[in-house]
Image (cartoon, rainbow, N blue to C red):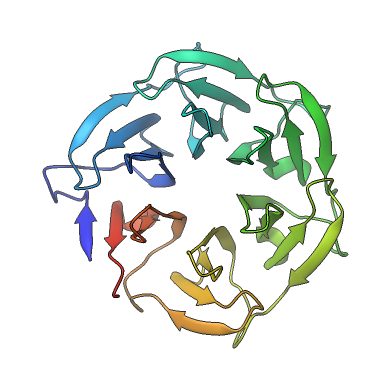
Length: 272
């Protein structure tokens, strides 16, 4: 296990939250309290950073989610700024959309962001209890979910990810469960418990090359691995994490985790 931040490699993070990785295995992070994006090599060398606290174009207010699109552009979801900003890989602002509200294209905390192969952009809308779907230019297409506890309903959704079959997975944090939807928003499946034990404030989800899914839990202070069917397989480095959020695999199979409350990013290399 390698560790970046908290003095390691001369780096300090201020509440690292989101993780994204591009085709060259460059790693991008957001900092919830640092109001910035950082770009690293796979060895932890700082290559670039951009952003500062504010509401002007290119500034940020509590950025939480980040994703790299198939076109290489960097999409940043701001929970405090209630918008999505789009940057080049070196930090040039390219586009922006969103504002505080509950209408189409408005957010009450844009938490995380994911893109599918067709360049549709999925944004978890924490306070409005839904996921909004946009085209790559920021035009609203439709929403998935609404407030509630039934199947397909959500309470404070946090993580969004595209699964191995191209469908949408959502960490429904307020309901302590994982939900799966078709691309058209049709509810497919949910897990309120997986393997042994309930989820405790699940925050994000990622998939390994075998289709297993890994979930970070803020209140559980853990990252766990599940089979494609939802059977518990393992817990990653028990006792290591405090309030983990973003997690993602790179092209080599290494897993990166934003260990938010410990102020570090951890890299776990594959064992085989």
